[in-house]
Each structure stands twice: as C-alpha cells, then as structure tokens.
Length: 586
Image (cartoon, rainbow, N blue to C red):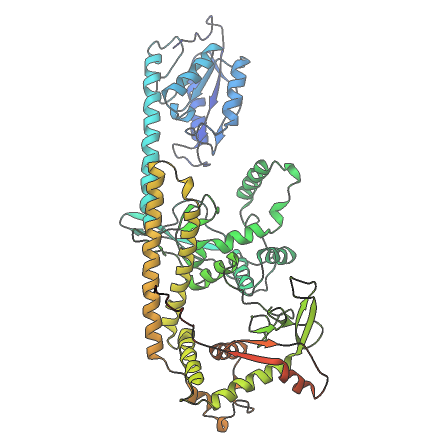
C-alpha cells in the first residue's frame, strides 16, 4: 500500500474533508448518527496542525456499505473530487462507514485515493492513517478492513437467524406495517413479536377523510358483492380515498414515489400516487394477512405473498385479520375464477332470484339479472354464440318470485315419505341444510376446510406446473419439501371435511314443522315466515331444495301475465349425485 505525503512544508495547509454513512436515517446521538460522525471528524481535523476543514457534504444516509449494487451518491462525489484534487485527506469515523465489503474493496478505495495524492484517516482507529506520518497504517488498514467485513457478515447472519425465529412464530418481523393495519408488540421467549390487527376505523362515509382501515374494509366489502378490482379502484379514485402512498408521511411517500419513478423510468410526470389502480386493489385482496395469516416468501411465478406454514404444513395465523379465513379464501376463489361472486343486481340491490345463477335462461343457460328499466329478470345475449342466436328474454320479477316460492312450499306440503323422488329430495335437502349451518361452529369450520382444500389444491397445481424450473439438488429438495407439506395438508383437509359432513348430516333434521306451524301452515300470511325472512334467508331456503329454475321464451299471448309466466318456468329440483357405474372386465 502506498503512503501519502501530506504537504511539502510547514507553511502548507492540509485540506481535509469528512465522509459519513448510515444505513438508516437517524439524527440521534447514537454511534451510527451521521451528525455524530461528522462532529467527531471535524473535531479531529481542528486538532491537527496546519489542517483546514473543507465544508462539503459527502454523506450517504439510508444506504448500505455492504451491498455492492447500492449506488452511494456522496461516496461517488467524494471519489470524483479526489480525482480533481480538491482536498488532501479524507477523515472517516470508522472504516465500516467507508465500506463493509471486505479488505479487497477497502484497499481498492485506498489505492484509488492514494493515486491522486489523498490520504485516509480514521478518528476511532488511529492505526488507520495512510499518510507518511504513520508507516504502520498500511498493515493495520488491511487487517481492520477484513475485520469490518467479518463483523458485517456476523451481523447479517444474526439478523437472518432472528428473522427466521420470528417468522416461525408468525411475527411481522420486517418492513412497513401493511396498509390498514396497526402493529402491537409482545415478548415471547426473549423475542419481540409484532402482531397485526385492523387499524382505526371512522364512522364517516367512504371518502377523503377515510382511514386506511376504512379503505381496506370498503375494498373487501365491494369485492364480496362481486365488484372486480378495476371497478373498485375506479370507485376509490372517484371518492378521493387516500391511496397507500398518500397515507404515508411526506418523507416516506416522496422516497417511494421517486423509487417507483426510477423503476418505471416515467420521469416527473408520473401521477400514480394519487390514483388507485386495479393492481393495488388486487394486492390488498390477495394479502394473506387480511385473514390473519403470517406471510412467507413471494411466489416467483404469481408474484403473490404465500401463506407461511409450520412444519406440518398448517397455516400460521398469529394476526387479527379483517376477515375470517373462510371469507378470505372465498375472495381468492372469486379472483381466480373458481367461484362465482355474490353479485348485486344492476339496481344495487339483492333480489330473490336475480344475479346468483339460480334463475337461468332456457335458450343459453346464462344466469338472469334485473333489468334497469323495469321490474323484470332479463337475459340479453347481444350476439350469437355458437348455435345460440342473439336474444332478449324477460320475465316479470314479482310474478316469477311468487310462482317459484309457491311451488316450493306446495311440494313441501305434499311430501310423501313413500315416494322415491320425495325421499331423494329430502335426503339431499337434509345434507344441504346441514351444510348451511344448523351448527354454526361446525358449518364455519366446514366452510374453512373446504376453502383451505381448494387453496392448497390450487397451490399444488401451480407448483407442479413449475416443476421443470427446479433444477439442481437444492432446488429439487425444496420442491419435494413444499409438495410434501401441501400433500399432507390436503390429506388432513379431505379427512376433516368427510368427518364434519358425516356428523352434520347425522345430527341435523329439516325443521319442516317449525317452518309451517304458524298461520295454519300458510307461509305467505302477512306475519308468516316468508314475510319475516330477508333476501338471504329466502335464498338459503330455496338453495336447499332447488338446483335451478329455467325460463322459456314466450310462445303465446293467451291468458294473464301470471299464467303465461307460470307456463314458462321449470324448477329443477335437487337430486343426489349419481355414482359412476363401475366398469369391470369380462
């Protein structure tokens, strides 16, 4: 290592500058504080004879000295000014502030400075002094650079190990608190565990004053009502609800905005921070923490956060979510297209038969919705699809509702326990009623187990599709381990679903007597059970006995509207699932 001669005579003034670096911004009196580093370095300069401080800021705040890919503007400026011979010596607090990449990188920096006649001095490591005043500086410099590198490696390992322990407990161990949540800390086995829960809610309608938790709740509610992420984003933007970026403090928002602009190379004209996007809405809906789950790594294919699972493959759920797991899984199924959304009609209301797939067009088998212009259910196929011609089919809403309800109640009143068809209907209806939740806790667990099964089966499918990308023994072991966890969890879900389903059917009976015991068995009396039920209860009742209802086109103008409607409706009753015939060889 080359030594640097500072000055050629007693009258020469040595021009000195300082360099400071800290990985995280802080202006406290801690050892890592840039202000503290600078004060110490300036004090050292002033203690030296014939030294003068050149007051130029070369500090780097919030930037790592370990990552070689990090660009440090202050350091780059320092090296450029060294080439221009704007100073004679660089004073640092400690070598670790200059670099943590090891001896080779430290020596490279020192040699580049020496090439331009610039020495390097550390205030806390007096043996690091590459001027000709300290001939032992070369050897000590190389030694300390190596130690700084080892210290950083040890610290990184400690952090990784700590994060691993925290993740095993499902702690939110790093990064900002998710949008809409608040974090609480607690001590568990000597570790500080951060658990999440929904943040503060307001009582005001959704708008500019809404809290982040209000925004998340609005997103979830509208998604459950069948609105897609793009439409939700448009609604939020129109209502001027604060985005996740706008909800941050000014410094954080500015930093994230600049980072996003740099990634997109969109320049200063980027105004995405004040507009909601379908991507942001989808990211919130997909976040497992919404259901209280801890998160694992990002799936490289789907770019989604995975659910953290324990050694048995079970989801880790340490947080309080906005929704129970079953509800969150249902949203995932809707987003994946694996389940229909619970949609409202065009009017914004939920009706007995509209927009949930029960009432179907006999021409194209599509579900019918409510017309915007009159009180009718409608199927409007605007262009031919295959052999199905374009058509518009309508049926009066009130008449259709009444006829369907009366037919269902009429069949219940005439059930014959000796009729095979009625026996089949009662068997299926009992199973469906049990699944709807005669035992609310069992029904909730059953729904969650079914949702977990669908989710883990989808994960197995996606992982299997990516099998060829797992190359090498390490990748193959990771693939096999993950697939084994998924398979074990799938097996447990299947077994538990079978157990819950069997128990619910055995322990549940249809409450036919309770349904018909009032008003002389007339459910349509003014204070009868039908008038007391809301839309959801009426739908649940219909779903027990009916698969769907078809509406045929109008073929005659004879009779009243109700008579013509009655002739067009066909109810397809619930039937047991037929077991496939076993094929045997002859």
